[in-house]
Image (cartoon, rainbow, N blue to C red; front, side, top):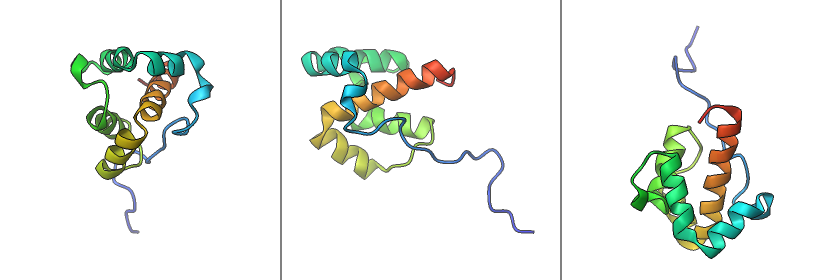
Length: 104
């Protein structure tokens, strides 16, 4: 019998909400729109990272790796470069969702 899954390996998943689902949580959307650095600090604090790392490709890549979310460094770069506010909102929504489930 062939082994198709490594022991302890988790199935890849996606973010809980879509990249353009900003209106799912208006509080997150408004805070990100009006004070994106503040949201970056919130995200960095949630992830126990340096407060200077809360926005951009790096934090998104760390989060994706930690929770085995599909994607690549290239897509992280493109999303955070061209849709940075949407990417920030998506990341915060996913963090909050995982906190509600108790898996963060």
